[in-house]
Amino acid sequence: MSKATARHILVSTEEKCNELKTAIEGGADFAEQAKEHSSCPSGRQGGDLGEFGPGMMVKEFDTVVFSADLNTVQGPVQTQFGYHLLEVTSRTD
Image (cartoon, rainbow, N blue to C red; front, side):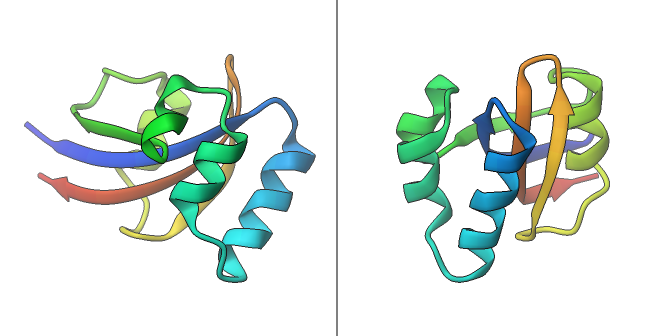
């Protein structure tokens, strides 16, 4: 079964999500941005979600995590919780 590890930043607006993505692409540290801005409890760990398999996260999240390039910031991805920036850190098939 496929497994992935990822980290994310959850914010309430697409505008804030795009702002953070621009900052990270410009050299800001993903983990520091997660600690400062993410509304998810995982933000305290730099957005780290640990390891999970397909179906353990919401559909929109799963679609990106199990198809995106590794170590590349993806998003904004809208879910019922808000807007996410995602970075897949590893994946096994």
